[in-house]
Amino acid sequence: MKHEIQSSLNIRTLHSVEDLESVRRLESLVWSFEDSVPVNQSVAVVKNGGFILGAYYQEKLIGFQYSFPGFDGKKVYLVSHSLGIHPDFRKFGIGEMLKRAQKNTAGEMGYDVITWTYDPLETVNGNLNLHKLGAVVRTYIPNIYGEMSDQLNAGIATDRFLVEWWVRKSKSNNVTGNNLHSAIDLKECEHGWLVDRVDLTLSQKHISVSVPGHFQEIKRANLSLAIDWRKKTRDVFSHYLNHGWIVTDLVKDKKHHGQYLYLMEKGDHHYGNQTNHS
Image (cartoon, rainbow, N blue to C red; front, side):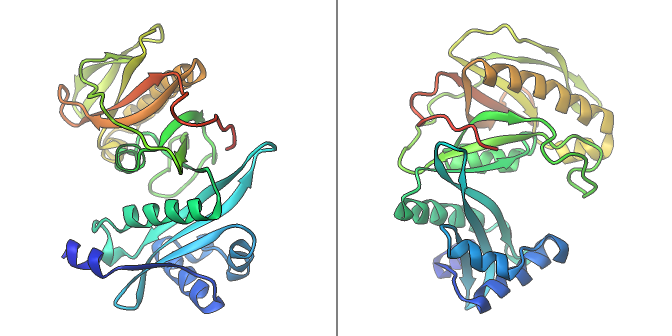
């Protein structure tokens, strides 16, 4: 089924009011009407340096990706604002296909880098963004959206990684992670693992940071444990990112069941010029 859908998928840039209205309807289905982008704003975006991609299966819009230009006072970049997949077509790899089409389109338009944010404790997103797509992270933003009441964010600070996806650069993931010095020591608990100790003194070129692979389950079972994971990982990532490391990959932790490891590397000369936008 996955291969059939992917081989039949048609991804194209959208321009007409009718197509952009279809995106708004799909966005309302994926999230809510209040969260959908008005068509008049979408039209302005596609006419001023941004673009919206639509993924069609049997002539039906089943996914979209929305990007607009950003500027930090020094450099123009592309902001990946949102991506949505129809509920009936998730887990078929359509999101990754849309992201790769986004990168190709961005390159054709002259962009060097694409940015977006995601929760570092949501490892499904981390696996796509860092491991599959080859993006990197140099910036940690605490509580960027403030308190939110939706199911994914309720009760916990909305900390985010700022992703940098360099359009004309490739990245080789050749560090496995489990033999690296870890900035977090773990202790087993009822709901998996908790942070036993944080180490902010590491100086090796390559280090790792452990995170849970089922953060939403932890939130539902033990909110205080989830908050502790947020606070401890915030301390670790903020410290090392501010001292010259970058996050380069996310891999499974072979020593601790259910955990993942973020891999961090000292020095960023392989990944383009630093961007400071948020």
